[in-house]
Length: 286
Image (tube, rainbow, N blue to C red):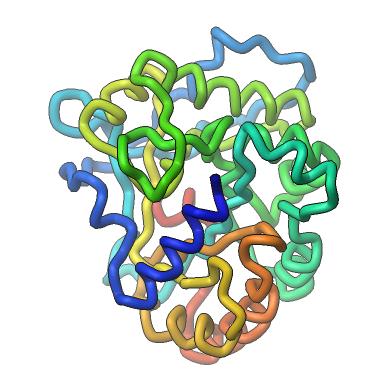
């Protein structure tokens, strides 16, 4: 479950280990524009406008595998992308019904008040649980919605205790998330995918090649997962950010209760250091 995952990730962060240690490291390919993700197997139940120009993605990696993006250019300006995982696994509906909060309206309000563009990696199950919030985020030009799978099950074995998706179901899990976004009223989800737990291997990259997504990792782990010390998390972010960084945080009150306070601390400090906040799409396209 996500609690087990995030606790272990938090512990790993405190030890200075990045989640990407469990991942392969394919070559980062040149930036190109590709079509939107395949959704033929999951027909839309909501009409939504499509963007006039497709968002930037990376060209396929070696052997035509799904490309992986970890950070932007280090020498094209002091830009940084804050990303937020809206996690909810396929089997957590009962917990949400019992009152557990997998959303974080206060965090979103803080980002809006501070006028911070951000990328939200959302699970399809989260969109089903909070359709009004998913639609509001998807229609706000300050944000872009990206795919974090439908189920938040792992795409490799031994990934922080998460259940796993079988190889023949990986593509369907991603496409089901896009279908959930459309049903919630998100008009233009991005062709970017974040592996649950950040765990992937060659088999997972190959399985997602037909979907046409760019897998997005990160180079700064915030350590906000189940943290109770917002100051310590803020220091970790501020110490880790470099030009072109992608910062991973969470958009779930129960799993990351300090994140709003962290954002209110790091945003003005990074701006004072000359950083400009952008979405992941801006980093990929730069």
